[in-house]
Amino acid sequence: MAQIFHRSTNTIARASIVGAGLLAAGLFALGYAYQRSPFVTLVNVPRAQQVPFSHQHHVQGVGLDCRYCHTSVEDASFAGIPPTQTCMNCHSQIWNQAAILEPVRESWKTGEPLEWVRVHDLGDFVYFPHNVHVAKGVACVTCHGRVDKMALTWKANTLYMEWCLQCHRNPAKYLTPKEAIFQMDWQPPANREELGKELIQRNNVHTRTDCSTCHR
Image (tube, rainbow, N blue to C red):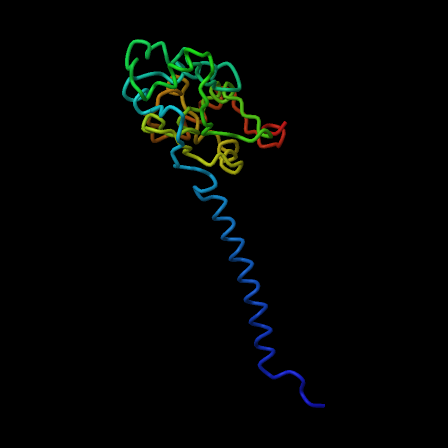
């Protein structure tokens, strides 16, 4: 019986199978890289706001403590967005005619709150209590980065579950003494993990990785 297919068909078939496998692997790698790119995660991407609030100016320049604006960070699950009154405590006296602050003055006059764009916006399926993390020794800079160097605020970390689990599995590498939690420029000692182990005992920290810890 005459040969139906040319001998090269076998080579083409093998090459097609290998090519399909490489294409699938390439598409997977591309999708993986895309999901972790700044285009999706917005890491290191400054977010435009109705009022260009500069943490760099207010924290590093003026010396405001995080808790002056984020008043509930030690007592509630949410850090809190400051009301217009907090802004006007200073800006009724200084820069009180600046055009850039007109939305703040308008908010104060009308009672309508300013609309801020959330920079760290976790999904509704994630439970993240700020007060618990602060009480256990997690510093602001651990999650939010050096906001004292941000003229416009951006995300310093992805906040993906795999990123959170690094700390939940080994908290000793990330804990900070309570007196330094709100200090942006605190430098950990060379024996960071030894200090962390001490803080684990002192603050009664447990490694929690079960789903119900964050998903309720």
